[in-house]
Image (cartoon, rainbow, N blue to C red):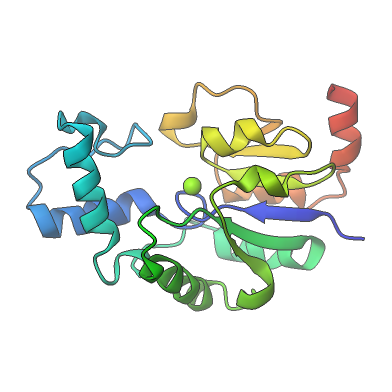
Length: 197
Ligand SMILES: [Mg+2]
């Protein structure tokens, strides 16, 4: 039986930060410095949380926002190979707004860049990713929140400046070539996990 592998989208497969910066600039004329060093890209704006949330809601609900991201380099080629070796799923947290445009555009984006994935079998939208956690299951994510709750399976941290202080992932990778090296050999992750626990 193939191992289950769950892969995040934003800032792992899709260059969310660059896409946010682009649409934000179009809407607000670059009046606020975008922080790429924080998970909250409006961290350095100095705005109260309520104002920041308004901006996030506006950007996230802008038609075309979720479909304009560039794929992270080498992700397509490596994912195509992983799709042969693993029971592969996309696992993405949708926006809290309940705006169906987000999930619709994410599906269209995946179909455009990762046409080898089956949208009805291999795409999961959920905020509580840890509900999918289990022995021998692998998660690749950039979010500390999701990684630290992935306790039974294997957590792989996709490096971004804002997660550099999180040291509790089972593996750290800097890019998709490193994911290829780590997962496309015959490594047995269940054995590694047992040995390190
Ligand atoms: Mg992410």
